[in-house]
Amino acid sequence: MADRLLTVQEVAELLGTGVRFPRRLVEERRITFVRVGRHVRIPESAVSAYITEHTVQPVTVRPGVLRRVA
Image (tube, rainbow, N blue to C red; front, top):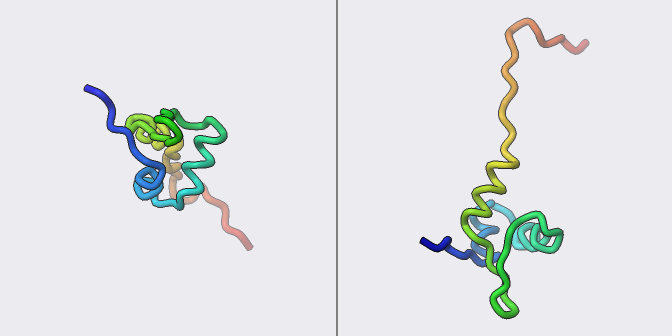
């Protein structure tokens, strides 16, 4: 089954950003995109992959290991 193609506006809403951010990702070739004539569409799987690649896991620290700041 083909991936759903999202508009730049839809990607911005999905990421919770303005439209400039996904446009910059496309311009810098940091995300997969498809040109449909003069329009740019981003596959839903590319957005999911981008989110997965840039997800930062929390650091688990044992109590007492952190130093107190004076």
